Image 1 (cartoon, rainbow, N blue to C red):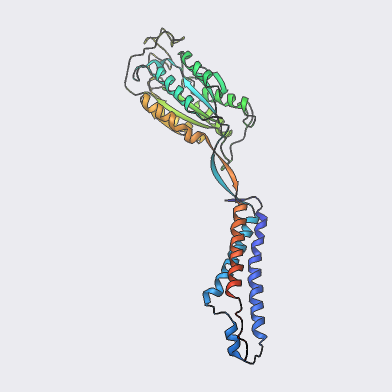
Image 2 (cartoon, one colour):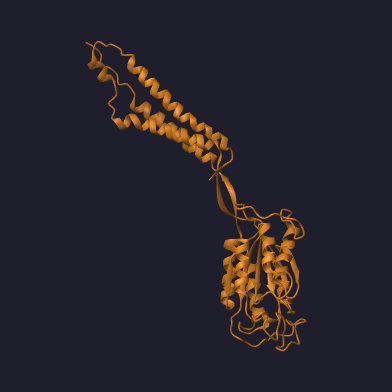
Length: 356
């Protein structure tokens, strides 16, 4: 909990001041003894009170003053709330390895179907953009809430050579910056995000089945996104089992003609000791950790759909400061009123009997 007006906490000093005045007044009354003709009549007039009946009103009053003093400082709580204008950039790998048939009918078709389900499931107000990447990355559909336009673009994905994960992240950052003036583009000089600073509501989702083979290093791109408060969620797709590379004619781009009927990701041999058909989970985990996002591993179409279905609960939530001053004022007022009411009720004077 934080305070908008922390200097107002000085009002807490009023509590010991009130207690001091009460103690001084009580001591003074004890010195001013009054002689009466009949002590029995005085005892009859005074209310019968136990020790707790004398203390409860005082305790409630002190608590009420404490709560009111804290409320004067405008306490605020940081709470998670649904983001009403989230922008989600979905970056899809279209390298030739996405033709692998270890996921039926192939990885690219399964990714298209899962992405379509993800788009249909988004709540109103969320804007989604599509980025396709292989050796280079490009914006396929700028962020929009037009579901039909997004769904129409997915079947047009075609494969190409290479896998530029870092470039896909930077392209997604710029697509968000074009829409959100609070997010600087990649060319701007941005200092690191301060610890404790809330993340932006905008996020990037990277779905890939391989390792970065060219362009900027993914970790370098992740630091650029993190400096802007943009979380990157990564999904490593596909199995580690060798499978034929098969795409239909509508899915083949300039990756066709490679040794497996499809290229991309360095086909024809391992890249840096890694198979181009296997997602670089370690690098994807590092990207997610750097940006405050999360990594998902999807070995088949069902796991991919589950991973995408889990994303809205994380990415469409942001944080804001909720002002609690009104609640503190109400509670403090109730405690004070209860203290006064109990004091008046328990200290009421009973009528003396009429003398004969």
